Length: 135
Image 1: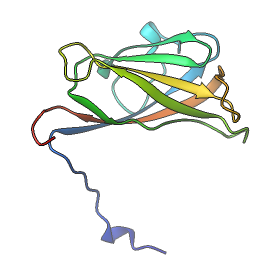
Image 2: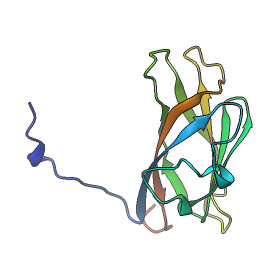
Image 3: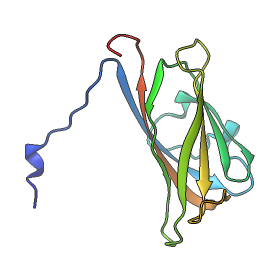
C-alpha cells in the first residue's frame, strides 16, 4: 500500500484555478432549480450562470465569468446501475474573451447514444486558466 503522506497535494501552472462540482441530472428537463443550478454541490453555484438541457443528453453550461482557457474538463455520470453510462465535454466557446465561458456536457449510454438520465449524479472537474502569462 502506498504511503499517502509521501504525496502531498500539488498543482501546477500559472494562473490555474480548479473547480470541482456535481449536479443531479433531471431526465428530459434542465437540472432543477433556478437556471438549472438547484442541485449543484461541491462548490458555490455562483460560479455558474446556468446549466440548460438543449436536447437529448445535451447540457450547456455557462459560467458566470470569463476565463482565458479551459485547460481540462473531465465529466462523468454515476454508473451505479453498471450500464456503462458516461459523459463527454465539448463545444468550448468564449475562451480568452470578456464573455463568460460556455461548454457542453453530453450524457451517453454505453454504446455512445445521447441519453437523458434522471436522478443520476454528473461529476465535473474543471481546470481553468485565468491569465495569458506562461502559456
